Image (cartoon, rainbow, N blue to C red; front, side):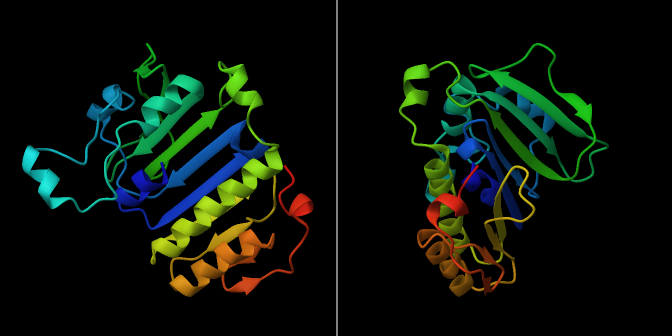
Length: 212
């Protein structure tokens, strides 16, 4: 989902989580958005807008194509997509289940250009898989680690990650930050610290820093 945001040309990516991402995991970007005509097949397996013809395989400029992320998530969570393309009169909101768009179809709503992917109640229908998850604090620590690693990789893009209800993010790297700051974010996560821009906050214990 993060890679899709980057491939959409986003300059800002925000992640919001509750209970380590199990109750809620939301990824919001300010990229190009999803065309209305693509929403019907958005969660079909092996579907992508990154390839238009066979020759595109030799000219890949994106982070790649897996064609499974949204499809897989739609089978194990309550998935909602809100998206708006440049120049559109309104945003569109759609919900999915088991790879298919719900019967109501995309509905107009207020929004800003970009896409917000909202996943709720992860593995609600796979109790054995849900029980295998680590405690929320540990799952959230993994999430912070992933976000901070992308901040190292993608210079020129602002990344943030916070818990729902938190007053400030646990990872906050502005678009103007260098990769060194992104690397500091990754290091801060590994040591249980919080990082805001180029200012590092005093480390806390892993339990207090990542409590949901």
